[in-house]
Structure formats: structure tokens, C-alpha cells
Image (cartoon, rainbow, N blue to C red; front, side, top):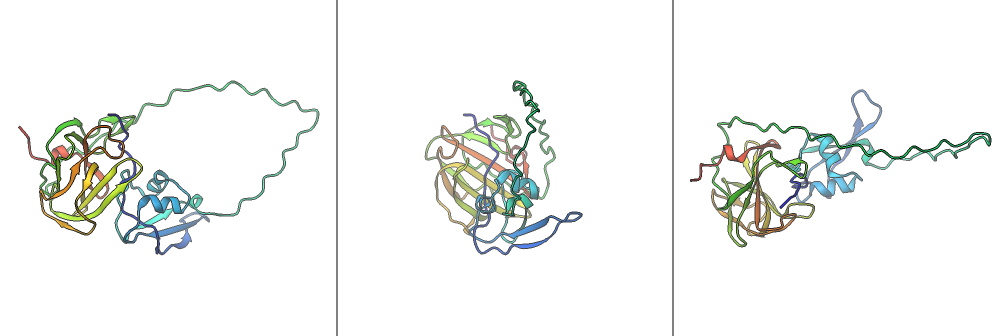
Length: 252
């Protein structure tokens, strides 16, 4: 199973937000600020302003998967909202000028991906994690998959196996993320720590629900980009991925 684990976890904004325009520092270009409210998604914020999630994430320093919180303010790049464009001037060419010959297109190899340097030190204030499910580790943290680093770990399992909350917290998203992750659950553990569970089969919790460590939250499936029963599991602090293996107990 090959997939890019880089895109659309959510929690964001669709309607009823409060945009405010101001002036960007050192620039005359206006800056649009969008405030996240309950029930919205990162994908719909980007689509509603005519930009993709990668552009919106880059403008706000939010990596994929794009986890945001209610009340968070997002800067919308100036090219992300409508503005009048001058009509292009008609091209003119003196009759004596001969159009140059277009050189053949040269295909250049893409540069190699930037080496990924995951955090190696385990923070002492991290939540005490339990393994979210049984299953063999297929893809470790940081290993490139389809040219992108894995921001979590992938565990292969069986259809219908139980997926449990790795630590106590509040479910801040439970539903379908259509771009890559399929059925997805995100749990907020406080202190900036969140865990995410993707490629699920059936989700058994709801947004806003409190869960205890090892409570059942879903079952294993093969939604999103998964081609076989798999759990994609992430641990983040303040949107920065951490290697879950550093925080999970040793399995014999």
C-alpha cells in the first residue's frame, strides 16, 4: 500500500465566520482573517476562498494533516479572494518581426525530497499513550511514502478489529475526510496534544464526546487511500508531528 499521508485531517470552518480585513505588515495588500467556528472544516475554508488546503496551510504554518481549533484565526492569502483583474492588452507584433522558434521542452528530474528530521526527544508532559489497536507496524514515522514523509505510523490489522483511544480526551472530529484519510477520528488531550486515527471502517464516537484511555472509538477498515485494512495513527503537539513510537509502550 502506497499513499501520501499528507493532506486533509480536519476541524475547521464553513459558515458564520467573522472575516476582517486589515493591512499586511510592510505591504499594501489586504489581509483577510478568518475565525474558525464549530462545524466547519479546513477543506471548506480553503474552497470558500478559492485556494487549496496546501496554500492555506502554508500561509498559516499548519502542516498536513490540517488540524485547527475553534476560535483560531487563519490568514487568507491575498490571491485567495476575488479582486478585479485588468483586461490584458491585445498582443501586437510589427509585420517585419519573425516569431522566434520555441525550443523543445526539456524534462528535468525533480529534486530529491528534503530529508525529514523527526523529533527524537520524548516530552515528559505528553499524555500516557496506549496502542490504539493490535497489528503489525507497516510504515514507521518519517519514512517517505510516495515522496512525502509519513507524519504518523501505519498498522496493518483485520477488518472489524477495535480501535481504541490512545489516551483520555475529547473527540474534536469524527466523520469522513474525503481527500485521503477516509473515516477519521481526532481526539484532543489538552496541552496542545492530539491524536488522529484514519482509514477507519466504522466510527463509534461523536464530536464533543469525552473518552477514556482505551475506550472504543472505531473499527479497522480500509477507507480513504487504504487498500487493505490499516490504521494510520498520528500524535501531534501544536500541529507538529511527533513519532508515536517514542510515546507508546514497548510491545513484545
